[in-house]
Image (cartoon, rainbow, N blue to C red; front, side, top):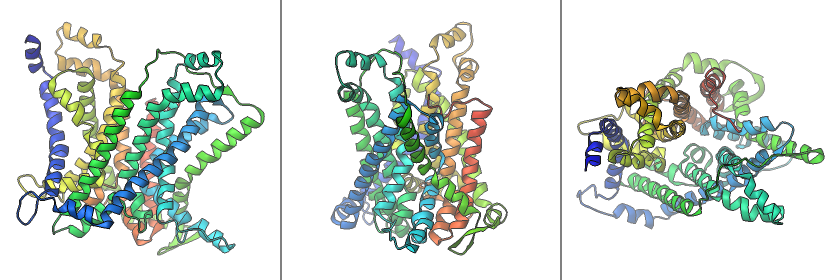
Length: 553
């Protein structure tokens, strides 16, 4: 009884309730409104499943759902087949150029989806450089729009997530268990199948599900490269545009189906991982084998070419930004600063809007992530238990769905946010804060409770001890969370494309509009600026703050 009373009087009760209130306002209430909207007849105001009957009775909607599952499955399979072997080679072999090969895949994470889509379009689209060159010698390529373009771009865009997760898992394996299998007479193949793979299975499944949810959530690639292939993310957006000012029932239904699909996948992943998790004592990682002769040459050549291929989008966008163009026609081989000058001097609003919104989201998100991660890791009160579950709910909500949910919630009533920059910043906050919480939590597990307890025993209040003792130790993780919020907010398109209004276009939105109009050179200029404002903070953090953001060791 005294313990329960002590928890109720905890000084951290109010901060945790504040965090919960923010998530209720920006996540739970909008999501509940969306579910309510999908099940209500707008004419009578009564409960109705007409929208869902329309969804399952309309071949286009059913096909979009099927296409989404297929796209997620194919993209995930491709990402696993590329990322897992690359992680195994980097973890288990030493070869010339390994340090570069190990780090370059991580650089693909900073390339926004919109940049990747545009770059491959410039190469393999109807007027792409590679396509025109091959056609000039009589080689015809299939259309890049549709399944091939979407899966190709998604696999090369997302394999890095599998690579990072599997590299960490491979380096965490206790090498003695593999040595024991060898000592018992197991061949390399049998050891891999019976020892290594079962231990790696949970990590492989977790990262595969991450890629699946990213593919299902992706907006830029299906919208730009999808052609006539409908998926839920693109169809939800087009339905939203067609229902503006009218009956919003189908956009709500499509959004609910997206949430249920991702939520189901995350639930299955959690249950399967819990049953397949192995515990082992901490030991040394298996020693990397030094590749020599032809093996070293082949490994180096394959890994380097593979990684360099995935970096092509960045190079192509840079070339496009400095290439002369007349409307949609790119004059490759002729150079100009006109595109960059137009973006920086003539039309700088998207740049300024992106910087402002990313700054607001990064500041608010970092403060929230720091407090929430501390509460979740260190405090055991009822409100924190609820917070621990609610804070990861945004992972199941795509950007388009979140944008629509916020519009439904704050388009009328006592609080009207639609048509303001606040709702755009709020969407960025919600979309990115779960990842920042994971980043900020990393350092807290290694901070012993005894140092905070010692401060409290010396008469310092719990709140003051947090600021004086815990925060200084968390500083690297806090900077890392801030940079993560900044770079991911700058690249966000799926939520802001629904929420923006005249004069508040961001760089990704401007790129999307320019690509849609066929002005690839102008889009490339904003793409280069976007990459610069993403890369510079990362470089400064690594160079001067000594943050180990992209360590592969």
